Image (cartoon, rainbow, N blue to C red; front, top):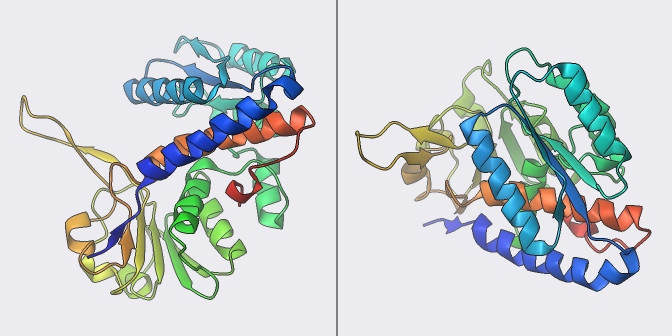
Length: 298
């Protein structure tokens, strides 16, 4: 039976560490760290995500500078809000909550965020820094995966890793982080011929395809480490509580994997925690403090 990589437990441990970092440096900094989560529109899932992020901030002493704009807000006004947050000295991290309402192009808005305040690590400059191995904010979900693997003492050097999914949000930066850890990395996607033939070669299989329950036992080499980034809400009977699942058929894969992330409770909590890590790391840099979180920024 596979070891479960418990993201909730590790996230709580890292939060305690962040609390201590903030408390120890608050007097020297002269102000607490600040995060601005910018939400546009009323997407229900985004509302839940933003609320979770704000609660996590309050637990470790990060102040909230976020804004919630109506769905019909013109792009120019959203851009003005980002520029105002860029100029605010109390803000160390900015996150534009996706998806945006129809008619708003995320590209120019993400590009307008000050790279030094890019709490989600998605600015072109920060993705370039990742590619070149230079320090900077890292994409939260893949960085959370790397923290999970490190906490479990799972050796990556020399291992064969396969990432299923090639998005800029997860797949591409995940592959770069695994490569930087000296794994041999392949990226698979929706047009990969004979997906199972490739994934069965993986010592470490990271699935971020966005398709519910697409990976089963026939895709996994016995003893592999399987990381499921997906999360989906399954239709349930009327009146019954909705069930969540990932991109992996957990009940099939758990008996043959050596380690696996559950859904929920695996990668999801780590994504929020790495957002906090990016914010506190930015605060330390902007306030000329020492950097105690380098091990969490792959």
